[in-house]
Each structure stands twice: as C-alpha cells, then as structure tokens.
Image (cartoon, rainbow, N blue to C red; front, top):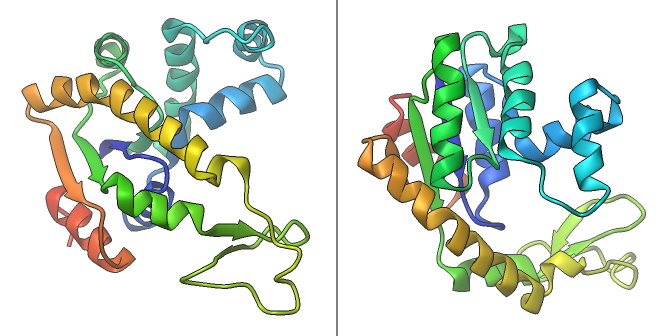
Length: 210
C-alpha cells in the first residue's frame, strides 16, 4: 500500500501516520526528514540539496523526487510507504507519478485530514514544552506538573500569529494538489476532529483496513 498523507500543522497527522505505519508495516517517509538526512549523511544527492538549502533556495522538484526514489527503493518500502510533505503542487504530483511509474509504483490512496483552523489554533497555541526533558504538555488538556510549570515554554511555531501564517500557506499550497488527486479518484477526506482512536478508525475505514 502506497499512501500520501496531507494535513495542516496541528491536525494530528504525525500521530496518525505512526498508527498507519504500525498497522500496515510500511515506513513513514517525510520529504523534509529525507532531505535533512541526505544532507547529514553527505550523500551525492544530499550535497546537491545542501547547495540550495544553504542559500535559502527551494530544492528543485526533480532532486527531491530523486531522493524519494532512493528512499522508497530500500527493502523496508518494498510493500509500500506512507509519504508526507510532498507533493505540494499539481506539477510535483505529476512529476512524482512520472518518476514512480517505471519502477512499478502507483499511489493507492491520498488521505487529507481536515480540522477547522479554530480547533487547530486551540490545540496548538496551548502547547508547552519542557526544555529539560522535551516533553510536550498542553495548558488546558495536559498541564505540566506544578514543580516544572515555571520552566515550560511556548515554541515560536506554536504562537498564534505564526500559526495563522502557516495555516494560510498550507491552505494555499494544498488546494490545487488535493483537487489534482480528487479528479483522479484517489482522494479521501477524513474528519480529524475527535479522539485519536476515532480519527484512526475513519482513516483505516477509507483505505480498507479493519
């Protein structure tokens, strides 16, 4: 099974990706993580990516796809993979399909987790992290113990102004790519509001898992 996972920051996408991975036994592949890993390992493709990243430039689609192809050619991805962070545009989606086809790969499902911005803002702006243990708390749903409450911090990415900018960019970037996959009958829209187990069951249902 080869799955693309789409969702805004704070939608629970990472948690659900881990659950799909555990259920199906396929690797969760993040395009951002792959780029950072290739750079850290100083691979030939990583060196090329670093040249762009060090200058603050976007890594070209063809280079990202090359890195993805190297990753999904590894033994643990032989029966499938869960990809997130790419593609972000219809041209990237078309280029990914063109690159995968000669290798006998096709995307089976595209899952878009939908959560209203107001819910995401409530979830995310209340998040706090302990800089000593890196454990994450929430001021309303999971407050830190009194003995460490004074040292927990809010990350810049979790501040409301920053989050609204990230959400606006997400909506702008993903609308066209979700339209692309909807036109090809691959898109599943899943309500991401509710308990983790409820959202998990919705996802499992649309991709044919019990």
